[in-house]
Image (cartoon, rainbow, N blue to C red; front, side, top):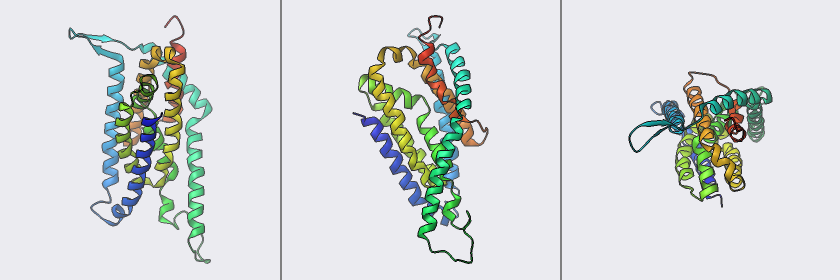
Length: 265
């Protein structure tokens, strides 16, 4: 049973609904108007820290004697990042995600305009409805990447699938609740649609873990490191420090599965 994944989906939906509900109060209050942006920066720093910690935990291990040993295969990580990003760039995953988000945005804004009475002498523009100015596409893509990419999504799903341990996914659910709340309060309902790829992504890993147990156990450490590095890039994007197309790097997470089967590694 996908208890952890379902809990994660539920917290994203609830966090999004709460953010949408409170957004109107944030907009009306001068004191609260800048709160979503401040929370976004706080979440961004936490995302960078989670990514850094995940990468270091995967690469280094402190033994009982207090010495530090290298556990991750950095060559696999490096090849996975380079080849995976190349594949993602050729497929244009980032563009496809944004295109899907834009499709949802067009549908949502169209329905909004059809429901509202309009002045026939006034042309309908993106600025006609204040709600239209809040990017559904941006919220969908950002929330999806924040919640799906990373060590917690992979490790949590694998632990649930291999050992029946959902504790890590429950912890992730709490973090994703806050993330969805912040994104939805800043950008609108698009954050809630991220619940769909979260369910498909984590559910597929959790269900597939039982069938690929032997293969996954050999590569899970490197998968975690790659995911953590991508998470750091996502955090930098959220801060506005970089404009990396993070979605194009997603294939890199799964390449260690293939590379670990090659004897030279």
